[in-house]
Amino acid sequence: MCGIVGVVSNAPVNQLIYDALLLLQHRGQDAAGIVTQQERKFFMHKAKGMVKDVFRTRNMRALPGNCGLGQVRYPTAGNAFSEEEAQPFYVNAPFGIVLVHNGNLTNAQALKTELFTTDHRHINTESDSEVLLNVLAHELDNATRGNTLQVQDVFNAVKAVHRRVRGSYAVIALIAGHGVLAFRDPYGIRPLCIGRSKDTVMLASESVVLEGTSHVLERDVAPGEAVFINLQGEMTAQQCADKPTLNPCIFEYVYLARPDSVMDGISVYQARLNLGATLAKRVVSTVPPSDIDVVIPIPESSRPSATQLAQLLGLPYREGFVKNRYVGRTFIMPGQGVRKKSVRQKLNVIASEFKGRNVLLVDDSIVRGTTSREIVQMARDAGARKVYMASAAPPVRYPNVYGIDMPTATELVAHNRTVEEVRDIIGCDALIYQDVEAMKTAIGSLQPKLNGFDASCFDGIYCTGDIFADDILRMNASRVVGDENAEDTSRLALPNHSEE
Image (cartoon, rainbow, N blue to C red; front, side, top):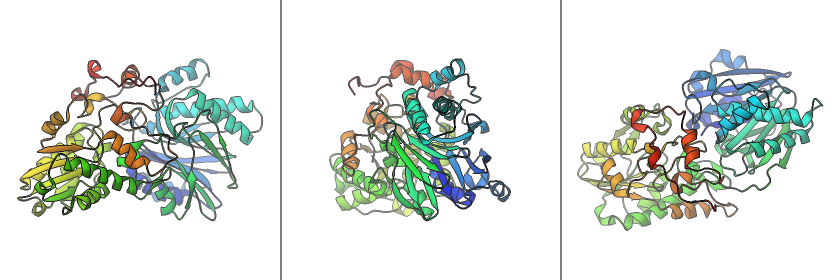
């Protein structure tokens, strides 16, 4: 999960891209970068850290030009601690290309070998985004053969990229002197949308970026589609995949995206309301509503689900936790130790809402269990009689390989455990999970054009159809985790999805 933006305008774009990255900050806190183009020359600044810390006045002044790209990074592949991994990435031939990427390539190592042995291209980092850039550059070179670049050459190159690359990818690339190219993987796993203002065309990961910068959402980039915007702002689009299907990542709606975004025609806020309605039915079947005194959300993403659940069950809704907005999202912090320490820095209880009450805590999801265990203990310390926990998402039982930081099975508290075993680890009096099919129905009912979802972290079915247990172990071989999270290869079992 990263946030990307691309802009073509008739005015300087450095401030506009900076503002867009601020609106995407929730999608990545590790690093940020901007590149602009003026007179065929690229100007770039990128570094580790959050947007407001990476860019100073002197940096912004050094980013002239009327088109450019930006990215906020949340590492799921490569070295999370290396500044070299920050995007955008640049390659000088053909033409000069810079690229930003949201997603995760599942065949990155094989591609890296191909690039070295067959394409004679050098990869200097461990980032799959640099691999993707070089695949695109190689195919653009093949498509043009030294001739002047034509728009159809760009589309032919993207077709070849689709044939070679596996996994999830939303991409925006700037080709020096020509324009901006955007494309999305054939399954539409990672989001990308297009908006316009009077003077500007903008591409971004979430619609909130367009609205927050006075652009009007025009549409989403379709799965497998490529969009090319020349330097005059004229847009051409072409479907470049053989059999595209729309299977967006369902975790975007559960947690990742901002609630005020619309993705692939689905309001994220409404999706979370629907999850709360279906979760209410699960709560009733587990804990009598008469035994619950108050419903309390765990900020921020769970609020819509919690409010809907409380309303349907006729229970009081209260804010029992105050969030320190200057502490990053614990889900995307590397390392269990850092996550655990940051929970109490991030949240503080309003003790009067807990003392002497049976409370139902509602969270958007439970991934590693570290945060949930700390929060349950905080509720008990504040005087709660009983602490029930409800998750608007089903148990996260399987690794995600498409760009969410839950790649090793043993990091997942629900992997190979029953609900009762998870409840015991978290320490709550009752644990209620969303049902997988109910989740898909609750969100899918909002967009009949969907072919399905990538819900692999919940159901173990990988929508690309080419991921199996051995592939996950191979992809995680170079991942740095603590001893407590070392992959137990004997326990990693996926459902049989050979027919998917």
